[in-house]
Image 1 (cartoon, rainbow, N blue to C red):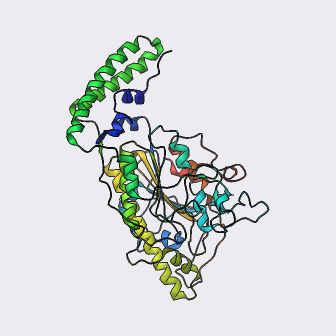
Image 2 (cartoon, rainbow, N blue to C red; image 1 turned 90 degrees about the vertical axis):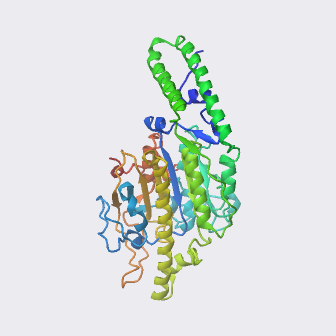
Length: 476
């Protein structure tokens, strides 16, 4: 039987793939080659307790966001930190986590739901909820997703050492619906790694940091490439004539790789430092440490899919310097007994979201610095829109990418959602008002990742029966 070769086979045989290369202090990668093949990276990020849509879409003293148009200079109270990246951004306004509002499996005969925090479980799956046997009688945390999440669906097909890297920041995370967001299948969650030191040990713990050993391995790889060249020449004679042209192109790529190794031109990704010990009171430190490790993993091609969550839905530790309670503030922004109490709580929620926007801007900086932005899509989304009444409609999403086939530098809005929190009118507790199901965003992401086959996300009777049409406005 004729052996089938591809680029990964060549690199693995040469000790440059995820085998020998993964154990070296510097990881020769083929990022540029990967881009030629259209390989992409997906980074999913969420934070708890929602937002305030009117504050999110308000652009401060700048020009208003207009649906379908280019983004103006971003000066709003929440999103201003992202302004330096606006040419790579897409803001999606009026997206509903519709699948979360359907009657959950195990609640047959029950009414449609407004699950609030629990919608985290379907944020990246678009499925209905299903009763979680471990919490069957706990009203607030009793659900899981009834289908796999897109990080797992995409990651499992890429052949990287880690299909999907799932990271968190708090030891409060469990397997309840406030905690989990990544699912291998129905009610089959992937627990997040919450300690950056554990993340480091998993990804890089066996890596030797000795530079002399690195140089020795580089010389060994050059020798192995010589062996591979001879093997390929022999194998060419065994191939049918119609396969030899493609084979010759592969041999040429090995020759180019040999030259790049010889000349020191192979892109390398270095092992990051092991983070110091931290505890749950250092949410932003842990977030930044997890992001740095995730970026290194993407650059080293240990994974191409990352999903990351700051904190836990519901009761979670603060990430503000003054320790303001993020969960209480979200409630009080709607339920405060006086206008003054509501406004004070809204200011806390605003500062929380602004800090998160600053961290998202830093994530984009790091993708750009590593040369990965053109092949990556970063998504910042939340399972709730306005955290005050815990509504799952009008959940804001921000996309960032340098991909040429995505139409960035745009704002898109659906529906007629309006909260009125900063007006003289009392805050408006609204119901669905013409938004789109977030399944459309999920299928847009899978399509952008080259997975046109994943066009009915969710589950039968739930997400898959919703509108899964990709959002055409996203594509150039």
